[in-house]
Structures are given as structure tokens and as C-alpha cells.
Length: 601
Ligand SMILES: Nc1ncnc2c1ncn2[C@@H]1O[C@H](COP(=O)(O)OP(=O)(O)OP(=O)(O)O)[C@@H](O)[C@H]1O
View (cartoon, rainbow, N blue to C red):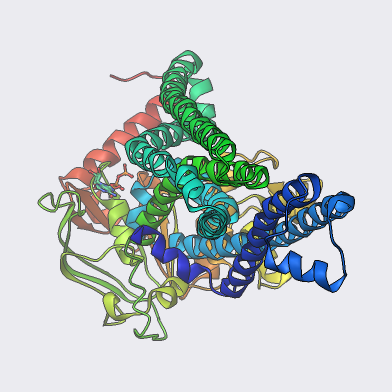
């Protein structure tokens, strides 16, 4: 139950709406309970023509000088219809208000979750399962909404119904009341225990659903790989297995539920039967009137079905609990420390790594970077070259402030990166990732991601990234829709749009994480030339596998196994024994062989 407590904070602005809905619900329950009394009076005093015992009705009769009610059956029918209509009218408002409150509450929660996801650290997103996150933000929210809109109201209704009806029934006949409620604890407890037993079933089915949506999501994102490898069969097999698993788990859950519905049906009908049999017995022995028997059959029906419904409500309650827990699990993840009260210095771009070491938290003993020392002076270009897995991207991520070194310091203009406010830092230190991601939207929207740049700035950024000529060739130019459902761009075009996005407002430090890899040599040179010319003041760090890219840099560092194994200029490194020369020789031979058609070994 305490798991639902966080929900109250999201009811902000809707607590009053819930309260009014609850009051109207109370009134509607009141109206429902009057109807059996109308039946009782009609049967006893109008059809049965007994003396009127109800003091209110007797009082009205005396006032209106009516001796017998036998001619007024129509009036009872009329009253019955009026109360039923009033109840319906109130229920309409209860539905409307609770829908508005639940939609609002879930909207608040969705906003909170989305904001939180945005603020979760890079490390979280690097390892997170997107399919699972999507499921939590959509289907878990839906479950919760259904619970808040329908089941919460229903729970209130059942509670009021039980309280009020027991009171009214007790006043009519205590003995009949005992018979009318005798099986209700059994029905309720049965629902309660069943719910507890089945809760894990809901969790298992939900997990299977999440796994299934992850398979679908991953398959759709990677469909080109699947096609390229002709791996459709294998994917269909994986999907088939997950799909069957989901079916089996859902089936198990539903068959357990079917078992519940049948037993609870039996218990409910037994309760109604008991009231009928005992009521007839009491009526025959003259202890209750026929009207009271009729009223009790009404009351017991009103009571027993909602209590049986409690099984359903409790089941939904279980699902809502699971959903809240799953959403809470994300909300409890620590947000990135943006160092909100940190420094906001004017960054010129002098970068210095001082004896930096780093390990990912999943394996703190494994040093991904160790003893890293280098600097980039304001306006310099540094190329980082090295074997794959040597820690180049990690180094870039550290400079962007996504992770903190476990040892040593990263300084920008002499200031420790840790003390700079993160959002501020990322305005000055820009990273173009290895895989460029384009959002669904126009090219303009993808370049001007903050939506605040002038048209001229966008054109200029596109020119610097050497994508301008490609863009104007599209029929709709800068308004061409890209991303999913948009035009298909080449890898190089995507990379250049991502570069244009990065350089649109002048940053002091630019990091290119192998983000020129999809460009041909000529275009790459052109992009680098433009970049350099337009960002003379910026410090540029280019991660690359190509010596042709690295050789033009002011400085080069060569990495192997998380360490810098060489540092210097191309001319020095190309002749010194070491990894750089090895790569240089290899790339020369490789390119030469390609040019001459030689295969090499
Ligand atoms: N989020 C992470 N959690 C744990 N280990 C990671 C994580 N990201 C990278 N690694 C590990 O850190 C090491 C360095 O990875 P990194 O991506 O920095 O290398 P890289 O030099 O950029 O490689 P490449 O040239 O292939 O892109 C690798 O062994 C990798 O498995």
C-alpha cells in the first residue's frame, strides 16, 4: 500500500476533484439504497395493504389524509424511476470527475517520469533497455490510469455500499441482516487471498510482455542488419519464443482468474440463495413481511456483486501496484549531478588531463583509462588514435562530463571539470557521437535542436559541415523531413547533419568521436578544412582510426589498453617505432594494395 503513496503527490491540483467525486459517489450510493425501501413499502403497504410502519411515510399519509396506499402503486413506480435516474445522473458526474482527475494525475506522473528520464545520467541510458522504458512510460501508465479512473472509485463505492446497506438492513431486520452478510467475509477473504497469490502472476506476465516489446523494438531498430544478414528466420524464431512465453504466462494468469470467477460466482449465488431461503422461512413464520423479503433480495444483490467485483478491483490494484513499483524504480534512480550551483566560467577551451584514471562502475577493478596526461591548447586540434576498445570514446565522454575520473583531474582553463555546472559545460564542450541520431522532423529542426537559431546560422552550420549542397538538392530543401518516415539519408549525410547541429552555436571545445568515418576522403578533408576555418578559436579533439585524418592535427595521442602509448606530431610518430608507425605502415600498404589491385596477406 505504501507503494501507492507517491501517487498522492501527483494528484496535485486534482485532490478537490477526487473529493467532489467521492461526495457525489456517496450520494449516489444513498439513492441506490432508497430503492429497495421503496419496493418494501410498495409491496407491503400498497400491494399487501398492511399498516404503514415507516414513520416518514405514515406522517406524509396523515398530512395528505390518505388512508390506504393501494391506489398509489404508480407513485412508487414513479419514485423508483426518479431515484434511479438521479443515481445515474450522479454517476455520470462521478465518472466525468474521476476521469478528469485520473487523466490529470497520470499526466503529472508522465511529465515527472519524462523529466526524470531526461535527467538520468549518460551511464544509465548507455545500459538501459529502451523497450522496457517505453513500456513503463506507456502501458504501465495506462494500467495506473485505469485503476485511478475506475477501480479507485469502485473501491469507494463498495465501501460506502457495505456501510450504508448494513445500517439500513439492520434497521429492517437484524436477523435477516446477519443472513445477508454471513458469506460476504468469505467472498472478500477469498478475493483477498486469491489476489495475493496471483500478484506474482501479473508481474511474470508483465515481464514477458516487456521482453516481447523489447524484441519488437530492437528488431525494428535493427531491421537493416537483420535484412543484410538474411537473419529474418532467426529473428522470427526469437520472436516466436518470446511470443509463446507471453501467451503461456498470460494464459496461466487468465486461467487462474477463470478459476476465481467461477468459485466467487458460486459463493455469491449461495449468499443470495441463503437470503431467499431464510427470508421465505421468516416470512412464513410471520417474522418479516413480504416487502422486507423483497427489499433484502435487492440489498443482498447490491452488496454481493460489488464485493465479488472486489476480486477484480484487487487484481487491478495488484496490477497498479506493480506498475507504480516499476515506474518508481526509474524515479528512484539517481539523476545526473548537474552541479547546479557550480561555476559558469567563460570557457576558452584549454583542456588538460592530469593523471586521469577511469573504471566503469560495473567493474571498478578494470582500468579502462590509466595515467592519462595530455593537453589541448585553446585553438589546437588533437587527434586520438588507437586500437579499438583502447578507451578513446570513454576519454571523450569524460571530457563531456558524462563520467567522472576515478583518479586525477580534467581541467578546462585551469578549472576542474567537476566544479562546472553541467548544462553550462555542454554548451561549451560539444560532442558528436559515433552514431549520429536524427529526430523525426525537418533538417532545420535537426540542425537547430534548441529551435532558437536564425536561418542564416543554420545555413552557415550546414555549409561548414559541407552538407548544404546535399540539402538544397532535396525537393523541400531545409524543410525536408528526416528521421523515421522521412527521406532516407546516407550515413555520411547523417553524420554531417549531426556535425552541423554541433557547430551551430560556437562552442569552445569540439569533440568528434569517429564522427567523420562515413565520409569519403575528399568530403572529410573539406569538412575538416571548413571546421577549422570557422572554429579557429575552438579546441578540437578528433577520435579517428585513420592516419590521414590524424596527420593534419597539431598533436596526436596514440592509445592502447587505456594508456597513452605515444604522443607527438605526425612527422615524429611516423618514423618512431611504435603503434602509430605500425598503423601508418599498415594503412599505407593497405591503401597502396587497393590502388594497385594487390590483395596483400
Ligand atoms: N558503459 C560501459 N560500461 C562498461 N564498460 C564499458 C562501457 N562502455 C565501454 N566499456 C568498455 O570500455 C572499453 C573502452 O571502450 P571505448 O568505447 O572507450 O573504446 P574505443 O577506443 O572508443 O573503441 P572503438 O574504437 O571501438 O570505438 C571497452 O573495453 C569497452 O568494453
